[in-house]
Image (cartoon, rainbow, N blue to C red; front, top):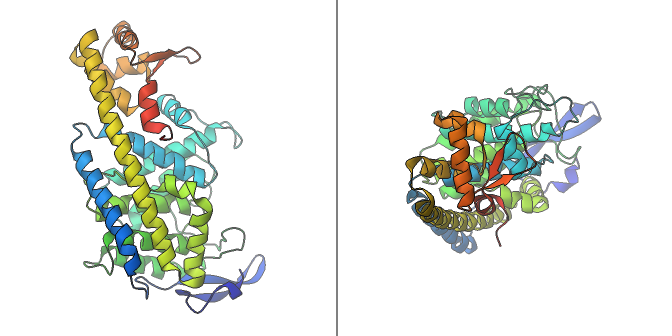
Length: 382
């Protein structure tokens, strides 16, 4: 790591270390809060971001079954956050994997990528449902879930690292392993103090920087750090449900994301980092509001179509499930609803006649698909 890049404004210190690649230095961040005053020029974007978050919370509360929005949002977060680490699975691949999970046969098996993304989904869902406070016990459990049965499973899942690591080779070297426990304890106390120095939304961004900079695990720090960010956004910013995720914005602006984290450490550029995150919050809140509105309109349209086909309660239940996951297999549906295969088949064929579902001819067992739901929930917005 090049010590010349670290200015006198750096919010931390350099430590001399000896590694397998020779003598070097590592960076130890100062405890939060930083010696930084939230600048007046950021108040308008903070205010606008908070306003959009309030609109999102209000709209979310109007949905009788919030899972029709929450589960697609969670999957999108899993896909985007994993893509930031070079792990790619499409929404279609992930949804079909959920219906029919497979075990990778080798490290080169494409199933690995789907399993890693699905692990992210499960870890995030676990964190959302957990009654634990935001503590390192919970974070270690999340990390263990992320690395279950995937590449990296031999890299101490759920345990803080005991070896030195580097980010981007040796471009940035986080604290040595014997120097991470005190910063982690300090960060946990900071998360749980009664009064913050900044707006709760800004605090989320400071904590995300601090966690990624401490880099407490051998592998998976980026992913578990973004799970922690998502949980903080819900728990500290007044959301009743986890409506907001930032990985789509971070992945679309990956180079800026990485560079700004680096420049906080080297130059103390807190303002630039927080501004970037505020714009991301604003962008994702607006997008989620649009998706929510479109999903509600589409659901109303489907209910009108159902009244023309067959207004049975069971068909309405199936339509609800389609919003949860737009891929439906007859065998799964029969098992979930406790009905005969022929009954489930007849129900799905009725929804096909009503132009809600189409059958996918290239997939076995027989699978039906809701293209309009998939487009609204998972495709890029116009």
